[in-house]
Picture 1 (cartoon, rainbow, N blue to C red):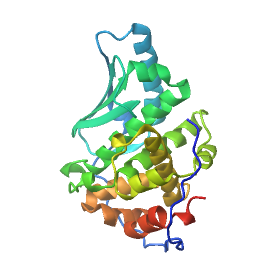
Picture 2: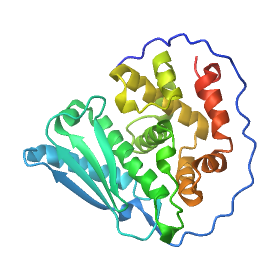
Picture 3: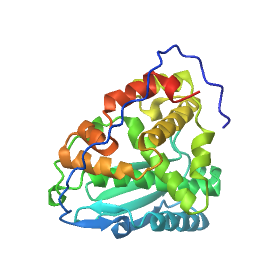
Length: 276
């Protein structure tokens, strides 16, 4: 999909938010820590899914799992990722979908029609993206044995979830030799007025028209890159702190060194600072 020219939106320019260094937070050692490698992996094809396609999905899944294997996860409980393969096509705007069905089980759903339409590179990136949503959930909802207070992660704006997952997919993709992280960030640094408005109102991207959804994700991706200043793994600390403190805005300030409201205003309201 080719990017469109940015729409004109009348806004008031502003300086970049202050990013004064904050004193390091002394965090006690985790009572129990695992990694993504400890997640039990199950590939579950539907009854009509061809064997060859299942084999392809399984190979790509194993590659993504291996690439994420060293990512730390708090907690001691045994947990599972199920990759479910369903015939046909998913809902519009959705190549794959993740759902944390319990504290111990996450499900990535892939549709055969969407999978076959994707280039091979994108298949790996999408699996990493969806898997990262489970990492977000398990980092924040890790349970009392790992010191989580159970903050309301549902209150966290949609764009933070998706920006993080996109950036981690690019980071892993670069390590696997599939894409260039920097080139992909620079390639999609444009904007559209409709996507900007959707980001301002915290719209769920699944409810948007396809072209608007596309730019919503790209603008969220670029904003997330700006937030972490080229260090995408800083997001891991954010999710962990959100679970520990029960206060995602405080976690945002501690992880990124800026108040959320200030960053939001200077990113999605006074957009001349960030986009051409």
